[in-house]
Image 1 (cartoon, rainbow, N blue to C red):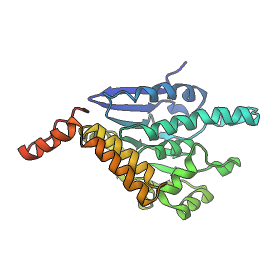
Image 2 (image 1 turned 60 degrees about the vertical axis):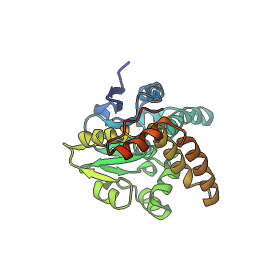
Image 3 (image 1 turned 180 degrees about the horizontal axis):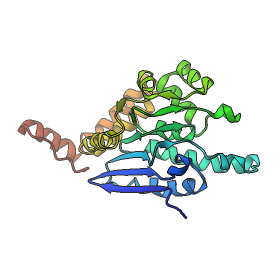
Image 4 (image 1 turned 30 degrees about the vertical axis):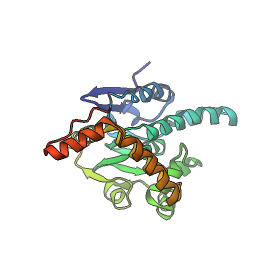
Length: 258
């Protein structure tokens, strides 16, 4: 079996690379099987930040057409589809920052993977969008929900109904990506941002991520209660005490995740 998903860990930053460049990193059966154990390894506390990217000229062109050409009954298709959706949910739920380094085309399930990440940095040559309706399909794997939360209902409809790929500049303008860099700088910039985040207090960052992910689905009073609970946990950590000491001593804090 080919290695469709590569994992490298260096200095507390993990890099996950979708590795099927001949097919623009289309998500085929092998990639679907290899993603879950890789994502499971990302839960290691020694890993404090994650970068996800693609090899070659694409981030991911989405689901492999070969996969859709199979004869499915409804139950089988839902079970297989749920496996990939669960992987995306796990990425979104990781208690550490995850950055999508979008090096080229990110379409369909490939874009949905990027949406499950916390931050999205795009190469200036990247193209993003949904083309499912060209196959008489709809966005799956949480793509519709995440897209609406990120860019709003009207923009989400515009992006999906048109079925066109948008360039990085337009994607940044509507909030689909937060930064654009040159193709040559993409991985370096993604790793630089990941390293900066990895130096933060991991417990506080993980709690903040949970709060922010929940914010769109709760009212203000519930949000305040969740914030209070999270803060009562954070204030008891060794990292919090180290942060206060570092502030008083006018030095950079050394957070240990304790």
